[in-house]
Image (cartoon, rainbow, N blue to C red; front, side):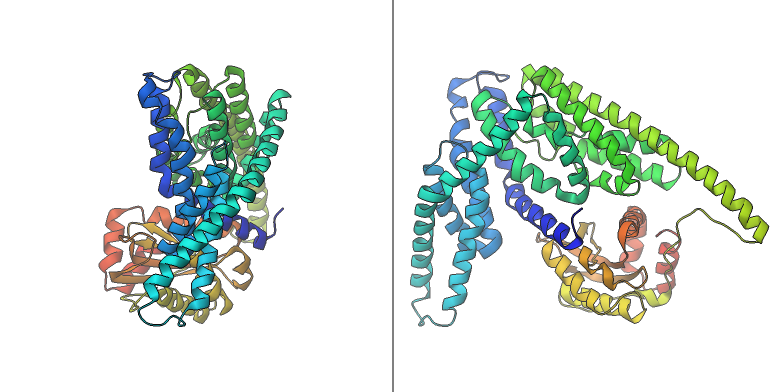
Length: 511
């Protein structure tokens, strides 16, 4: 197993890869639709329109990814240098250079960022624009030359080696074994690193060769996760059943895989169901020689069907359906077995408790929220100040050590905790859980709102700082999300001036 620190680093790398790819998903979709509709094996073959496909995947998309990677590291200057550097990869390769762009873009952005730091304050007034433009041009030129002669060939060799390994799995009918690695990794939130960093580049290369690729459905197949959620709906009661029903819709039609991860983390044995579902899905794809034209992102059933060539429609539909059925069957068996064991254990515990005159409960311990845990009308100029105030309150109330506040800042710098609907849930890094003394939350209200997420419209009015360890962290996050799912509750929390009202709204609902 990965250590907490290693897990954070790998998850951070996955998020960084995702942040390079996700802004350009529109370009992937445009290319995928053109391929799906107009290439010779498409729905409406058209030679002239099909001629758009190759330049888009060979030039446009790698350069966009290089641009985005440079921009993430060094802003607009890094973006321009990243695009120029990526052009060196494109010019010297015969395969789509998505992997190379994910390396060249950020690296060239980092170089120009270091250069800017080196010359900061040393340029005479009036020469700034001249130096900025020429430095970007020179770094971009050198980067493009380096990529043309060295990075491009190295990436081509690495890609060929990976492809050869995958081909061995395909020829030996053992491609299904990938699920043993992929499904557990997804539950650790490494799905973006796997999909965007490995399978998408390999899939696009395979599309260039055979017109479709199985790699686009190995990680993004919604079937295994859908089966687990349906099993929860069938076997659970109360809030778990209600939330899993909502998660099912979001997962299947919205393509957000992360919604089912907490349900598996609550019962890790369900990974067996995911692996079996993934294996069966891959087997069906191989049996029918089915695949997609392009990455389906988000991985909703709608996007998957849009990216499916007509010759693969039956295979893709069966792959999703069979993987759902297999996962559902095994997950239902495991959940019912757990309930049976729990009932026996509860019965024995109850008998012993009565004999001792004690009361026993099988419910999760509720997170206690007192007026001291509520901060109304928080005054701050940015999200860092809000985190500091709520973090200090967690320290004051004895929930965490002071070092936990820095872990909260690190987590926010890695990826915003803004959820949408004017809600943010700041918390510490996985490695910072050592500073949690006892679980708890602190509620913060900012009626005028404060800029929080990465988008201009991401403004938080309700901020809840969380301190918890292990699976309880996921459970508390889930219960808070469910509690704040009510529009009426949110409106009251946005504007209330009564601390007791907040306590009433949250107490007994966060567990």
